[in-house]
Image (cartoon, rainbow, N blue to C red; front, side):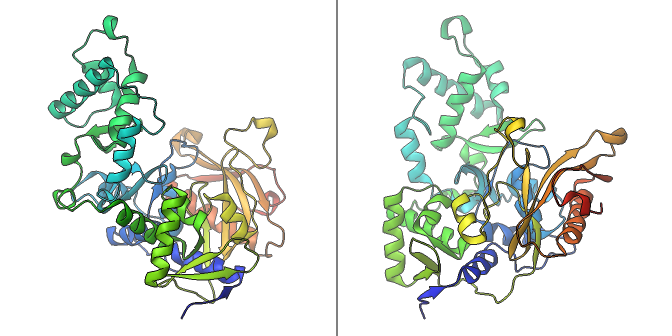
Length: 402
């Protein structure tokens, strides 16, 4: 039966359950564990910042516990490929079966000539596109540097450099003419033809209509959120507002989404009919700045009363909490935030986890420091870092026991 209202606490626990925080960590996470976790999150945002651990690895750790990162590489780079990178939220891993659902987005990017419409359809650019596609077909998965070095062209006449090649490759990728086969040790993208990346069974699937694709993305966003506003649902796969609203109305009519009013929220919300409404959530996790629980900052504030901004691009002297700050989830609340760095060159390469700052949130329970200390030790062990150093910044720092 449709629920007419929910408290914020109920909405918060519903959201955490949808994201997989009711699942108990496995002693040794398997590929099945990873697939189950990806079904919960829907996407894993990719980011190049590596001050701690790259963004797409962290949400899996937060839910599964310590796991072998090779699982993610196998899932994304080996047959049978289970996930693939695409502009699904922003740059993100998505389940590979979403490739047909994204065809309309690819068509839009082809019409716009890229994500931001800056790849002009000049004779030179079109010639470069053809050369890149021919080179990839001939040599297989390649980085932009590989292709820039190998193109059969004269630089004096065309004036292309690496960045121009990379921009055209990004257009070919977002428009679906090439796919991402993986990344090398320098985190450079390796491009290949879609038929050598996407499983044949997925390529053979029919392309849904634009309306069907919109419903599928909203459906998945609703499952990952549990309860959400239209803005939340729109943001998850970065859809147009009008398309999201249409899909929501249709899913409400079909009974898959149930309108609810969350106490204190100004906008109406929608509960997925299969969402779990637990009485209790016993989570303990450090959340990446790019974790789906916190990436939409307005939602984070409405669910957790937690004001959060990433300060990577803020000058050091103006930062409030630090460069790479992770919220600390305990139970069903965010009770602290901690600025972390993995110093992999420390002590002859043994490495250390550096806590550059640690701050308790108002009303944090008395066990916060003890629980955070235990989580920091677990994280350091997973990252292969032998020691933990706590710098004296933040009210929580003196209480930590590394």
